[in-house]
Image (cartoon, rainbow, N blue to C red; front, top):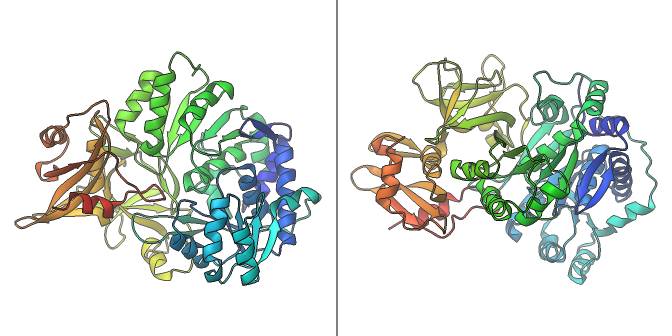
Length: 535
């Protein structure tokens, strides 16, 4: 059977109509009510001229309207385009035009005003849909361009009719991802592949994927009424994967407008939250600070797991969380917009990242030949099975990232490098593009970063090369320490790294900073790091 995300949501909503689907800022919305609101949103979008295959940009923070926009669009077989609201005007103009967006949904006044400044350069946009009041600037810009304006709240006046055309597993979901360099790229997922890989076939806590909508509906009825708090913004791939995963399970999603550690900690008690999704240390550090501050004041009894995806989650932050609640299950998901959910990796006391054996993850050489377990050869981590179709409107990068082997096997090869051990587990070394060549020896930045993050005084770190007359390049690091643990020196860093790294991998230069900067997408900003450590 070929699965469609809208069909799946509707099947679950029919199976558990009275169960709470979404808790947003204290408001509880049942599956039946959310499905009806999504139907109204779908009708509004269709009335505004959006049709099957059209791309619609969602320039929104977390909100009920954000969720119903996603659901409403896939119901009419249109394609939601996630937009990072932290992007600059130039980056926003790029994503609107690169995605061929015919419409944009926008809410905040500051976002509307930015949109107004670039609207005349976004040739494909023909409709702007505003949640709430429209700013004078956006209205004037739309009139000057001849762009139609629609109120999102028009949806409230429309009937919640579920009279939709038949959908297929070939319908597209395009997920824009921001890398460490360059503009974001649109990853094209078939709905069926999206279900089978990012959503783990509808069965993330079991071994076998669901085989039918009836099986998904039956499983949702049996699934406990658990509350999953998504701390990340919905424009982030990890949050979108989680939203659809939890809806497929018939669970309750707890969503906040913005990430506020105090609100997250309070929600553990007030909403009986069982699982929290964060994105690496960027969220983990302020969250554990708040957990420590409120320990003894807030009841953490319901919380049994914290999951991270999309960014490095250091052992020091994990250890502090376990000190607050020792029985927590901490899950570090390994995956990407281009590969979906690859499972959870382990990290030992030395910072080594290891993925358990999986038939969907192999190690290949430059010619895409599989490297056998136990080999000492370093290769590329490749995902096989249900992989995306490619990058939207970028055949060159598609061919490079999603190659097809001579035997017809398609794979996703993102440049992550590793070694495969005798038991088939893969040790993650780092991204090949961030490889440092020092005297002919290769050093992977992420491997050194993982070792640095294992130091209890280091809050964040990035590793980059700097020029060396004799060795060509040498390893350098930019490090931010915890304010309450000052006084870290270069010698301290080097002594710590010697416990797990070969001598040539140890940083020779360290720049200590108050904060390690990252891109608007939360990725490592290696350009900034290189400029920071440059002599």
